[in-house]
Length: 141
Image (cartoon, rainbow, N blue to C red; front, side, top):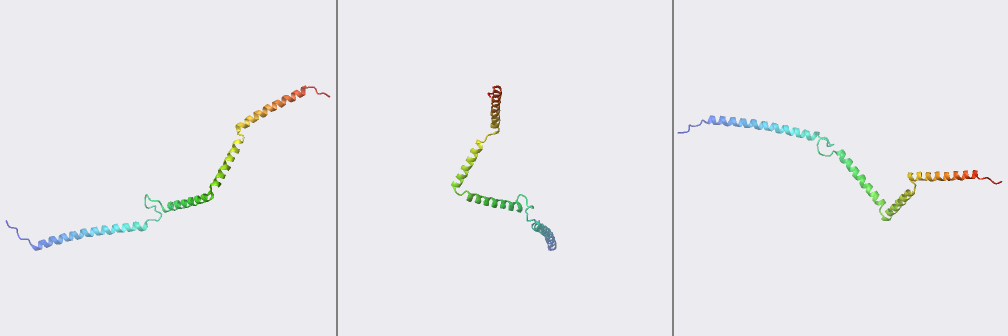
């Protein structure tokens, strides 16, 4: 069996057809790549700086608020540290608080007030009895 000779024109036509198909495919992929690049560039250019377009990340406003709060706490810590720098000053403050607590504990409570009213009531009854006794005793002229 022998292989029939191939016509060079047919081979060239097939090759031209394959190149044309390949060229069409490359052009379609190129157009899609340019479109994707345009969409990505548009997304980067129009993203707002506040960070609301990105999910899961803190916004610029909340980061600045947190930074201000940290600065404020650091300042308060430095102020409190310098005010209470000595142990003697802190001991004096504790002693003053203890004296205040003892003074407040010595004050009568509302339960003590009812007891005081009862005592006063019994004393008034005793004075009333004394007055009655004085009225009943004859006075000497």
